Every structure is written in C-alpha cells, then in structure tokens.
Length: 141
Image (cartoon, rainbow, N blue to C red; front, side):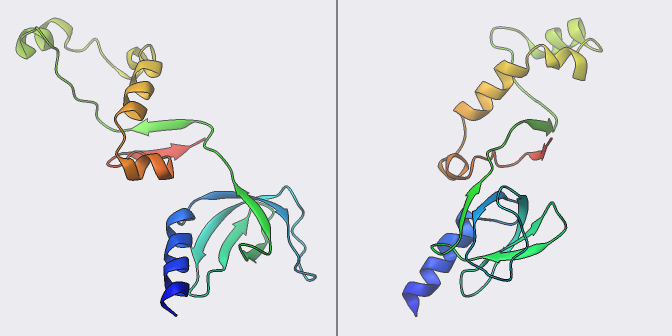
C-alpha cells in the first residue's frame, strides 16, 4: 500500500493541477477524445488516474502506463510581478532620481531576454523539475 501511495504522490508532483497535456493514445473503448487533443490536468486521484479537462470540452481520466500522453511544454511566459534589483556601483537614490518615471513595462521589454535568462539561471532545484519559478505569478499565452 505504501508503494502505491508513493507512486500517487510522485504522479501528483509530476502532474500538478494546471499542467497542460496532449493525448497520444488511450485504450478506453468509450473514449471520444481524439489523439492530439490538448487538455489541462485537474487532479490526480487516490489510485493514480490523471484527470484532465480537454480543450474540446470533454473530460477523460488518463491511466499512466496504459494511456499514452505527454506534457505540453510552456511556450511563452508573461510575468506579472514587480521587479526589484540593485544597481552595482551606483547609489540607489541617485539612480532612482536620474531614471524615475523612465522605466515602465514597455522599457522593460528591451530587457526581456536578459530577465528571462536570469530567472531561469537562478531557479531553485524544484523549479527546474517543474519548469516554474517560485514566488512569481505567471500566465501562459
């Protein structure tokens, strides 16, 4: 029983609610979800079934090892958070008085690649496993 609980815990960690998955093949004869359909994981139940709500409006529980499905990689992240940092070698008050009012969301777009690389580089180990950054609200588009 403990082995099954450990397996379910691992599945819950691997497929947390909100994870996007793509159906490859299912052996369920009553299934009407087409292969290639993408859906969102709602939960992993106590027996290890991964329940998803599909973009087609249907619901289908997937059984790992019997059904074939894959996680859809994140395509783009839009970060909604205040960004704070230190300016090495400059007095912060001097910097703020010089650039106050000049930095806004549009200005930050110029630094998008640098910010994304820094966020990825400084992720915590659990964030690397899940592909997420802790402490930030993110939205996929």
